[in-house]
Length: 372
Image 1 (cartoon, one colour):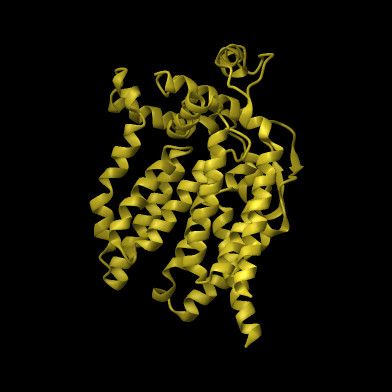
Image 2 (cartoon, rainbow, N blue to C red; image 1 turned 135 degrees about the horizontal axis):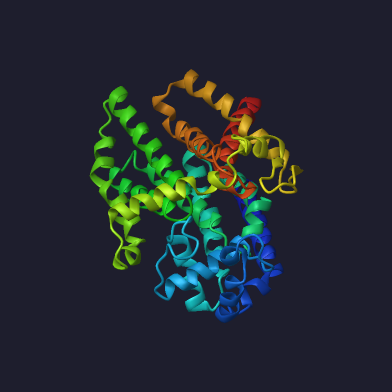
């Protein structure tokens, strides 16, 4: 019975994913016109300010910036507020496939795969492990990004990959090397502060294990941690080749940190929580509070599943449930970082997989208790 249920769920996931890709096939077939987008950029708000007659959205901006980076431009010349690695990936796609949206397909599949691997480690059951994958595969935020050149999908993949290597590293500490590289890629794909915060959470977690349980994994983290800076800085190689130094690099990151808040200094903090828990969003460009079409009650229910999980951890013992602690700490650290910026609903994409796994963990416990 379980075997048939597994293939039924897997078939549903493939059907939803494949149908969405087929429906938006035109987005993957259109050739990228670099001359058109160069002219569009020159006439857009990114060059002429908010009085410009032409506008260029984030997906188009990332694609144009990626194309220019592949041509050898300094990654801080266009869209410097976002790190360069994700845009390099889009630029390579334009170079190879003549299309900017194809990486979304690969990162969509990779994200679903790594969510399954994490779920299998936590839930210890292949059928149950597919349930969070299914929830995420029908998630509107996920499906919308599958046909665009946004950075949230690769960001989500690298964040989930880092957690997977962290969980597996408990049995094989050499896998912490993969975790460090994944964290570096998180930091240089979209928001460096979020990646740095996740890395700090991991460091604190491993250090706490050293103090409480005399666990030596923290020393493996220290051994591999220099590679974090190597991978992060290597994505800015062209920036340094063009004559910039470490002091310039420091001020660049200082400017990035204040970029969004300087534009809207009076915007309320913690708005990301309203988006997650109620589906309402206080837009920062003047529309007031709007209702999100992507929101479902599953967001709220999944978040609330954190609390019975905490109770279970303290009841059964912390050392036996360290992976559950990581599943709680990861989304909370992301939400904490988002609380001080100008949020978009899509920022929740890397948060939702962890919450869905926690929800399924509690559903599995309840189902097993009901069977008994």
